[in-house]
Length: 237
Length: 323
Image 1 (spheres, rainbow over the protein chains, first blue to last red):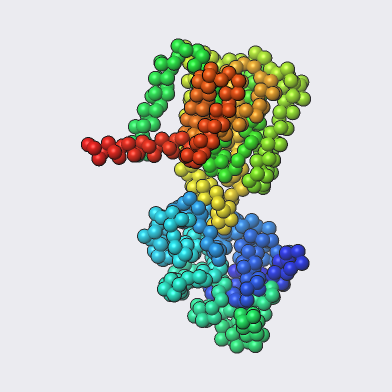
Image 2 (cartoon, rainbow over the protein chains, first blue to last red):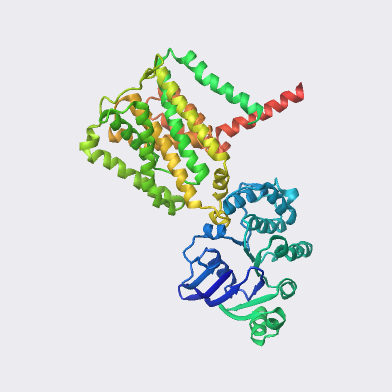
């Protein structure tokens, strides 16, 4: 569904993403890991259209989307969340979803929105002001809910679990587990916690200084010496 | 619409269309002040629409006002078009002028404000230098007056009042429809983060561009009305920066995030200034406006209309507990 071919993103002299080639199928649930600064979020930004790759090509469902603006990619079925939640200000939770659905899919279907609100445990917060009246867990849930409202085929989740307390994390894990089955979306998730990844993903891709150094099942990848070195080396530095 | 708002809207319309002409219609001077206030109020509403829905601060609305005035004046004088059709063309002309400004939308905040100000000057220069069409610095005389419709002379002060009032009402209706639509909700959402809306499929640049065109159309409409109301145009008058500064003061004073706040602000600010302060302090009376504006920003940053609404709600609540 998504094909990255030799994608590089350079900021001046810094190569944030270095010749990454990666294929994501419509039923994949992939974990994207790597130390801080490894280029994970930049890769997401390149896929979703927030930054333009310096070279390489990105295809989504067979079509080249390199020149496609971000809002168009969302309409094509590329959903994403931001690590720092970006709720739409001045709107309620429900209005956030209505805007996402209306512009992401072209029409409004309140039943589907209720379904998403239930799924993300936001049903009783629907009338709250999204920017000022939600706790962090709820803001993170809203990120996922907004992306789901655009009816995505592929969902890029950027550290949705980071910063949550244990309880919130457990609830969220349950939700993420069902996400693929309930909405039929392919998922690529950036996550630091190896246990989480092993739990949720059938496949793991590892970035190190912008380069893809491993891509395989969690068992194989987390036993790979190069991965262990990059991971623990950076984590303990 | 809720019943209470429906009733208050109907009351407001009745007062504006019937009570005001009956009470003030005999006084030509006051009536002309009211018309001028509504013209400024209309431009203020168009300015506030761009700020409220598009998140843009424009110093260029004098250009839209002037272009609307010139297009409407020229199409009646040179082509003999009927006044009302020409006024619509004036609005359209202002919107076309805004199309030329669209590249400016890439800029943000103060950069946008400055760029649109510079753009606005182009049109003033155009009106001055392109004298074969515009009459140059000498301006245009004998612009056709508003016609007589159903026996009502719309060129009279009261007639002009009814026309400009109708324009204000029509623009307010259009504004409220836009604001309540999905586009309006998305536009509100764009205020703080455009990326947050883009990532869910909102073409934010297109929406902002559309608001600029709507806002320009409205400002142009009031410019066109003014041209036929005073029957004379010259570049320094039609593109005067007062056509943007007064509306900004009015909009901020009245509450730029509400639909009718800017109109209320214009009526209050302009009438108080012209009818009271001007007679007390013949020169430099605008100073008082500055003081009023600062006071409003300090004590009620949301403006006059939200302040009144809050006060009204409180009073109603008090009445209820007493009853």
